[in-house]
Image (tube, rainbow, N blue to C red; front, side, top):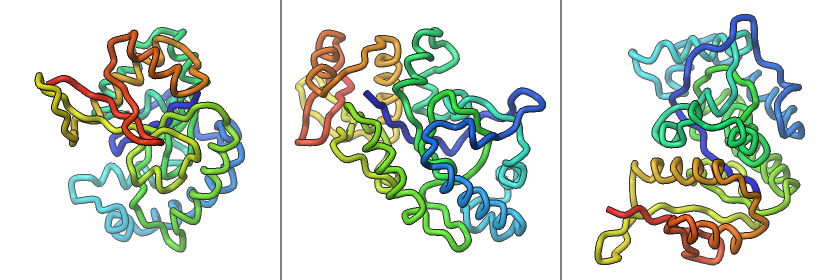
Length: 247
């Protein structure tokens, strides 16, 4: 089983002094060439802070994000699971995971980054600012990532649970995957789509999966586990699952 997560615009600063990015140490080695291309284009953009602010849609109070991108090749690194913050990652609460759960994450969880493509949860990366909708000079994010990421996901085999946003899913479709949608359910059983808080539901579900540590071979196994665990997860379409949070 592979659990696919989106990244987060917000990231934890810092990392051990003296560490820095090593592309050869990242998972999904087939993406190395695309990573070099993305990093090179970001470095070119970083030479012009005004142009970078415009391309990344950054305001005057976000100048620290520009510095992150200018230093990305020499900044200290943290594991991807610890680097990303925000609503989903706050709900997942990686710092309190057991060593067993983190070990399971390293094998069965991937995070889709606009800069690095697919990352394993324990891949060591610097802080940066780049999203699926960002524009890099002379580079189409779709052309850069779509085919290589789809190929990497196809090669992974097994059940793929896709928790990415649609923007990231479009940058690397996962054939045969199950896309997760989160809804709220009231006392009468009525379900409605969730907005911002769908990320909380995803984070809670991922934490439960990591703590359980079960390598589900297929979606039926996943649904059976969810039912026993009291998690309201069901099929909503041929290739979609629906997670209901009770109001």
